Image (cartoon, rainbow, N blue to C red; front, side):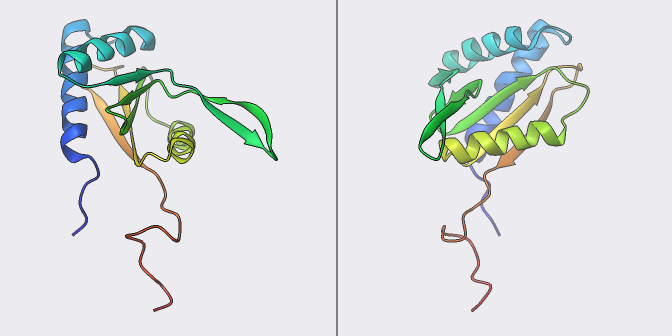
Length: 137
């Protein structure tokens, strides 16, 4: 049986998001939920990095930066959204962030409705990383 990555931290982040949604109610701008999440997470004793910039290079030249909304406890990327539903684009963006930061987990949080929706996105493992089965054995 596989262990759930950052299970306890994920639960605390989702719990914080539920607190924020219960207090603010649905339908506000994403940035307002993001700011409220920062407050709630810090009150819960977490470290929160906000809009940290990660440079992206192509053939040795800087082509831009990836900027995840929040990184909690230097372990989980958190991206608050106000959308009808999560799309493949949202998931692909999180995979890009995970690959660049080398973190293993991102949480998409949707504050659009009265009931919080969330999605866990895991970084794809490299073939030489541990926990990858050897298919040639």
